Amino acid sequence: QVQFVESGGGLAQAGGSLRLSCAGSGITFTLNRIGWYRQAPGKQRELVAFMVIDGGTNYVDSVKGRFTISGDIAKNTAYLQMNSLKPEDTAIYYCNGGRPRYSWGNYWGQGTQVTVSS
Image (cartoon, rainbow, N blue to C red; front, side, top):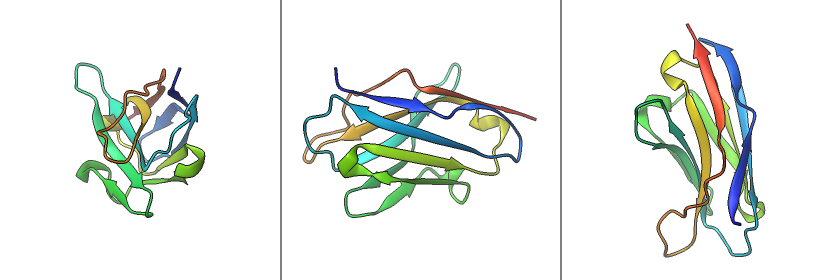
């Protein structure tokens, strides 16, 4: 089964930091991008940050300047450094990948819960 395995979530206070990790499992093809998504209770899953094979990164406006994505796409690994956390960052965070000339895949794992208290 092709999926990502996420870790590193937990409970943090507002203003605090967490570092999430993910690693691809069962991936036998080449990805050209990896992204971090999150899903808060009652809301749709959203893409918050992604990185592409040429080194570029992109962030949703709500996390710009606070979150940093890094990793090694060739090794199917990614990290999300989250600083200055806010209660609205509370969600389950997931990794996903995309292949060249394809849309984002469906490589969802269990995710990792991030809870930010005020």
